[in-house]
Length: 554
Image (tube, rainbow, N blue to C red; front, side, top):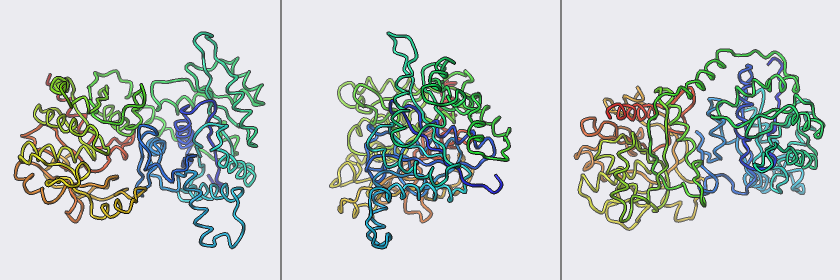
């Protein structure tokens, strides 16, 4: 974009939460990227937590970690996956983080003795970060998703920031409302009134939608588009239908069909764009591969963050789900995931429940914290090890695999983790020295070993084969590590430490030899956070391939 003037698109939600703002924002960024524009995304969360790191996954979903170590909302993962990029902490903010920044600035006389008010100084702080995020990425267009729903008290300051930014750049800011159009079963008709009220509520903040994306079970008909256009003082072409679809990765193509990119480019007066047909084809080929109808492999995810009332919250592991899908498509197989609560492997029914793992082509144990369900996970690991079922452990999944091996192969019967029992004799998993001090101080927020760290791989190992290189960079989020006091006895008994920190002090990857197990690998980091639709992660690729081979062997 010649002589570019940065553009800003705010995405807000109406009627209900979970309507798909994050996917809509990611898809808008993607289709503009298809047009040769450099895009980036910013997520605004209205809670007072400074970041997402201290929140329970069963309430808020996955905590996503950026390369720079910032802990944030799972929507940041969507942005990175859709845009094939790595974002920074400037692309994420909360009410708490903005207030903290304003207060720290006031304490250091950054306001030069002025009386600091909620308005305008807090919205100005929001605007400053949004503009900075655009500068860091050198973006042509910045897409800002405001979490929550219109009408909530928590959103007011961020909506005020959107209004103030529009006053600052009157021709360079637009607002997109993503709203829900229910179809009550007893009525059997798509209702527009809730969305009309959402637009009215938006108007009370001094904003109005430039585009309205209508989320619904089925495509919006022309009559509803006309009705919404009339009642909301909009043009019919500004009403975009966004029905339920099989995959979130279908959304960009749906938006292209609705000419959403052309409408945005025209409204923001963006000139000299050119469609990148190669990128569009690659994306469409990826989406097509996800629907290839190939035979499906069955993967069990044995975790603990599933229960939320009477429902299952798979969002606690959303990056793992997506990483598994990407690698399945690459291996030309479908995938069926089953969520198994590790507590089902504890108690009297454990033996019969464990036998059910034989029905799966692979077992994955993801990260987590705390004591609950841990013995069940260890029993599951023992079962898959003995029965040669492909195994992939992530973070806690690596630590527990180490404990299982220490207990059952090295005969250290009381082997455990510092996290489970700090006073135990044989803490095979120990706390990082700097972490012990932080915990004693009660410093929990943003204090783990976070972000991207290098690791060196041992040649000739499974890890080296999967990565095809000897040095890697992966994202971490943990306080505990495999203790070096126990690595000698573990390795003497066939345990393989195939990846370590560059100084050799921190084990990063463990595995079993091919002669002992067809595929058994576990990592201390979170590889799922670097998996991309067009660039699946090598360890996930290997795991899926092993599961596919197991199914063939049946």
